[in-house]
Each structure stands twice: as C-alpha cells, then as structure tokens.
Length: 251
Image (cartoon, rainbow, N blue to C red):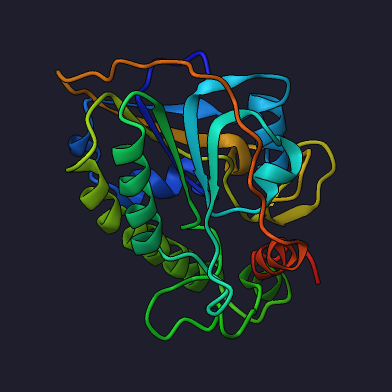
C-alpha cells in the first residue's frame, strides 16, 4: 500500500505472461513485472493489508476471501456477489466502482475484478459458472490441453480488459493495473519437482507470483483524505460460502 496510486485495479489470477500477451502495453505509461506477496488471494490480502488501518481507501471486492482475512481495514469495503449467476461480471464491478468513485471522490479506489480467475466467461466455455467445472483439474487429468485452457484464460482476460476501459474513462488520478497472483498450468515447482496447477497457497514460482504492474498517469490527481475505517458490512455466511465455492475454494 506504500506505492503511489489513486486507483488500484486488481485482476484476480492474472499472471504477468498472460497480461503481456493479451493487453496492449502501449496503452500504459509504464509497465513492469512485480512479485506478489502471495500465490493465493487470502495470502496476498493478509500480507498486504492485515494490521493496517486504511481510512483513505475504498475496496470493492468480488472475491469473498478478502473480508475473511482483513476485516475492518478500509474506509469502506463493498462486497459484490450475484447469488443467482454465482459470478460477478466485469460490467457489474464497473457499475459498482463508478458508484463508489462518485460517493468517495477523495478516497483511493481499489477495485478487485474477479476475472481472469475462473469461471471462464467466454462463449461456449465448458468452465463457466453454470457448469462449475474446474479448468485446472481438467488440465491435470488430461481432459483438456494446455493450449485450450490458456486460450480460455486469455479470453477471460480480454473480457475484463474491454470493460476496464469504461471505468478508466470516468475515474481521475494515477491508476495502476495489477493482480493478486497468477495461475500455473503444469509448470514444475522449484523445490519439489511436481507439476502445479491453479494457484495453491504458499508456492513461490514465477507463474504464481509474477504479476503485472501497469501504470496510467493523469495530470488530475485526487486530493486523498483519511477519514478512518468503518466496520465491514459482510454478506450472510451462505453468500460468502457460495462465492468461495464458485471460485473453486470449497466443495
């Protein structure tokens, strides 16, 4: 949180290699790979936010893990979840983010999009929210090829990047696009020579912790004011469980 930004856009589960392949890097004023503090969302959230009081920041999250590990940390935490479709679309996140930006013009805005994390939203995807199929397990079992999974993974990133442009047109300030962690597609772990799929916690390897750090400068900076933290208005337990189950964390 010590980095300089007015808006931090987190694309859940976006490894740097994927971002560099799909995104138009010329769109950004600065681009680097950085090392995430976690290989899984709760690990990343705990390492970055636990023990801090960030009364200058509004966090919009589509991943139920965040409030589970860092409660009552931000000026406001908005948890977004669709109990009907079991997924938060990029469009819904943008709508909620624009609302938050209007309500809190003097706060840093942290918008945590679910994509490109599974479920994969692309047309004819066998790993969408309705099927609840896990692409990483399918790859590990040989039921899908690496090329097939990578293509669907890339499509999910394209979907959120297209929607992100709508948000960027309407929020002032220095904006950074990054990720909490990556995903492994069968790369071997550095210590134990076994193949890794998805994003298990506590594993330090490039496919999991190398993430993008893409900066968009703006002559108009926000006048940030710290007005203290508030208690997180958390969803009912069943909603949180449904969120985590849909993301593949619980069965």
